Length: 293
Picture 1: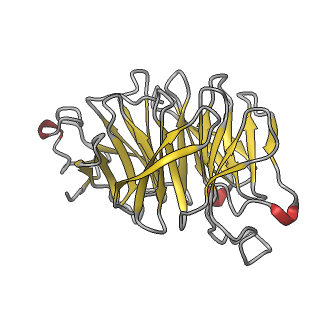
Picture 2: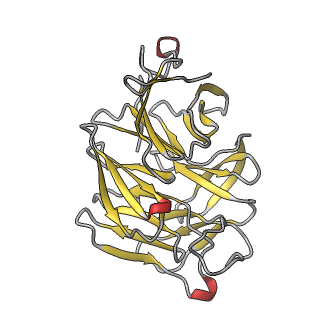
Picture 3: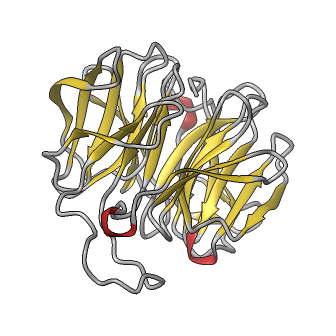
């Protein structure tokens, strides 16, 4: 589906909201801003405000429920993927030094995970937190211009689990080519992980100790970040946003006029505003369904 910018109001008129079971009737894709270097990692707090990163500029921004856009933090450790925990803290993949940070609403930073220099992570990319406070982390390798090293720090690009309060990560999948986005179901039973290096999304069962079991192929698509809605549909960012039902069947595709769509989440007071990070820009689209984050 093509999307053409309406310069008067930044909308994209080809989205046919009245023909979709997911998109709100008459809704059009809205460009909020295109002022960034490269946007990533959208995550929503309990009020519906969205935090996202501008990684090349080492910043975290906020998109408020009132539609306002503001800078939240400079010098973020080159934050990439984000997650907002129940206390309102931002859990950030700080890949400048292969760390995971906790950033409070008052902008106090605590390093939750830091490996010895010889064993540091390749580049934490995305995070999801379970009900016990354990953190799932994808660790692909993308060479950054701000790194001095030119080779991966670890031989494998894995998915890790950091139990709550612990300082050591546990590898929970070591068989992926390049894990990237991930999201868990609200009941804590399932985890979805995109293997962008192999063009696949996998679904896992989550055990009580945080380990993953029964990996199955969910969809074949080159996917970056992901989110879920209240009906169990999965939204995969990459070439626009492709939506799959709980069985892995494609049910919708949202075209986004950008060279790459990196990630997606639901925000707003009613959690029915789809927020999309896409290269230099961020977009919103009003939906009939609500998010679960």
